[in-house]
Amino acid sequence: MKRITQTLLVLTLLASCETQDANKEVHSQLGDKNMKFINELDINLATLEKSDYEIFALDGNKSANEGTEFGKKVGLYQELVDLFDPENFNCGCDKQMKKALKKLKPKNQVSGFIPDDVSKNAFMADTVSLLAMQGSNILAHLFQYENSSRKSKPLFAKNANSVKNFNVNNFIEKKPETYDQFLYTLDCTGFITAAVNATGGVSAASIKTAASVGVSAKKSLFVLGGVMYSPLYQAFKGEGIFKGNDSLRINVLGAILDEIPTQEQSDNTKILINANYKVILTSNSGNSNFNGEGSFGASGNASFGFGSVQIGSDGSGSIGRTSSYTSYKTYIIQENINTKPLIITVKNVNDLIAQLKNS
Image (cartoon, rainbow, N blue to C red):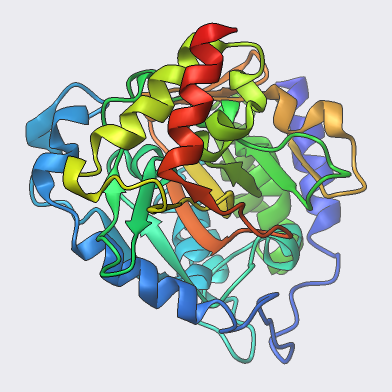
């Protein structure tokens, strides 16, 4: 009871803080500058055959994925509004508080609640590609080949062991000095605090109702933004989990060649692999209570950030040791961040495989 009273006092004081400004415009970092990539990705994903990926239903339930789009273009702001919608992340808000949250609206966006830290740091582009099912796994293992006569459709290196044991956490850049990154986490107490701070004006009764649930609810949410490396590209360069693991490199490089028809494997055939992708991962399905909220950016505390986030191959994950997630969404923003991929040929890959086998 004492904890609820203390929480109620803090939240009541926050209700007098400055609310979100309805006259303020909120703009993404890129606007529509990523649309060429998003449109190309949309076309490429549509060419994938279902047989290419359905056997890798990572949740072990193929039927659950039937009828689900692999990838689609979505508005990122609306997706973030849906993530923080009190109907989707139920922390005990009563009708009055829910109504106040849903009325929040920047001048140029749809209505709904997004914490300021998230809109400033995770609203990276107007339109992004949402990957369903085992999306980040498949995207990370896509490539094309090109010769003098044609450029192939996207191919999925399905025989790679890194597909079978995919963990996106192994391929997210964790050093803040390498790429900009962002992590925002909160449980129900943090959600109610942020909601009261944003809305103001709600009654003490509404705050008390939410606070009584928030202090005991075992729920959590996260938004993670950063750069995901391609396992195929890292296998070629011997970086990340492939450093010092020659057998895994040989397997993954061989899986690339497996997808290229033998008659197309001339020495000069180019293998086109993206080096990395800018991504956002989100979930509000967490089971946790770490008492509050936290966020960091490129200049923040890296030890609190990506190093403590664990995302599993089945779409589950954890933050630290106290939060687990049953599912998450992957949003793709851009490709090849601050880098130009190497020109790789079939001969390069064959020579590297021979070198690794003889080392």
